[in-house]
Image (cartoon, rainbow, N blue to C red):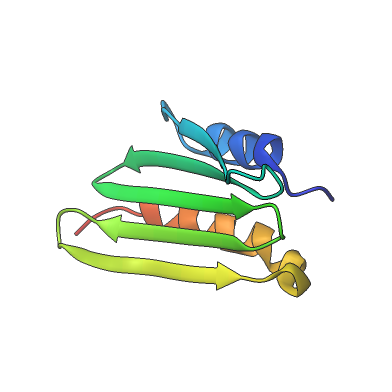
Length: 99
């Protein structure tokens, strides 16, 4: 499976209702490396996923109501198989009923 920006957008949009993604592509001056950043707010959570050209994958989820970080995950290139699980965990976290 190819874990790219298209995969990430479809994964989030198909499982989270009425989500609005902010997508930004950043490149360094040499244009050899890039980062795709996807941000969104959902159910009181602020979320950011960073996809690096070197295969690194970062997932951050901040609970804006409790003022605490609930997910802070970095996956390296050799951990590609964990990307789908990390996005599933993000979706389950932000979709859970609040108490």
